[in-house]
Amino acid sequence: MAEEERKSQNSVGSHVTMINGDQMGDTFSKTDEIIFSFFFPLYEQKKNPSELWHVFLIVWRIVQMFALSLYAIDEGTNTVDPISAYFGYIDGSQLSLILGKAMPFLNIGIFVLEIAMIALMLTTCLLYRYIIASQPWVLTFLRGFIQVKQRMLYIWITNINISSFDCFVDEDGLNHWRADNDVICFKDNYFQIVGSVMAIINLIVFFSMSIVLNIAIYNHNPKNGGLLSCPNGTFATIQNVLLFAVIFVMRMFYRWPFWRGLLSVGFAAVIILYLDFLQPYYSFMSNFLSTIQWSIFGCESLCMEISYLFQKQMNNFAPTIVFIFIGAIVACSIIVVNYFVIKLVRRKKFFLKHGKPLIDMNNEDTKQKPLPKQKDPDAVEPSLRFLQMKKMRTPEIYTYADYVYTQALKRHKQNSYLYFNYANFLTYYRKNYVKAQSVYRQSRINSPSILLRFVLYCKTKEGSKGGGESGGEGSELSSLAHKALIQQATDHHENAKQAL
Image (cartoon, rainbow, N blue to C red; front, side, top):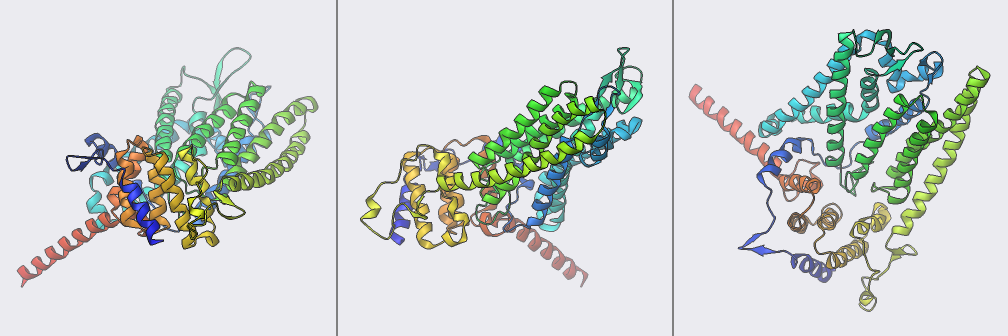
């Protein structure tokens, strides 16, 4: 094993490019440092984080998506369907409508929260050394505030802002505001106009920040990152964009039930298929649980669109109630199918045969057998996710996984993302922090994307060992705190001497 480790080290180290004694690309531009330092306080790699928050967030999102799937407008009266109104308090659609003329004040409040969040991020960026040394609770508050506002209240805030410009045309051709039917949209009521403008600004800022935070801030610890840990933020961003589109379609496409049903069910199907076959999260349970909300939403949306056709003909709510239960049964069936599909696809991706490595690393003869060609560098990390199973975390399996990575790097020598995944493996599984830092450095050299550069910037700030074991506050950060405390102690000592 020591020999394999040495070969692996030499294999990776041989690709490092040197120019005048410095590694090309092993630094960040001034622009990068300015931008990255603004978001760096949000970067956190907790070891074994509490699953309670993630489970609550998943359950909360399931309930909200169910409520959103029931949203409907009675085109005859231009009012929210009674069943939709009842469940509308959960997803925020009805809550925003009952405020009426007070809506602009709520929009202003949301705008203030947006500004406060950005101001707090800027403050922590400028005063980071002081905060990490003496006021670390500020970082905890900021991260918690963003988690609640940008993720837990995502559907609420989006629905509330959309309600500010949600209008309908009556029989006389007048455009009424749905929150207050006495107000003509964008005409005489300045509060409604101001509220609509504020709502559009809120949506732009809120949506933009959500994209940035989802694509840049995520837990990439494959071993102890907990639920929803992932190698990149691509899926979280796609899901965020499609969720915004779903809310907009459900709220604004009520006049075109066919297109509303097609788009809402289509978006749900895209997310489910993405989770089933691409499996963006490290763990099986994370991928499976993420399909539940979209399975329920897609099935209920389809059944509700059908039920409203019967409801118009029969003029009662019996079809709606019946189709809610039908949608629940269909959703349960889809969820069970997702469970087995994810499991089957996951096993097919593994670089294993009958549950064992393709190559016996203890046998010199079988080690000469080549691995299957790894044409796609992005498929290497998913093929090694059998490491999620504790029984597979043995020294022999670790050596095999290391061998798979080094062989892939020989074929894809310039792939920065592959180097990043290999460094994560070394950090979190093998605890080889020194080698991991050299591999992270190699990833920086090979022209990573701006998103990966941000994560690598954060890893650089963490230091050599901070990325794996210190819960997100690495050796450099600990050093800053230590130096600040020493300075404070020195000042207190000098003051005490002067007092004597």
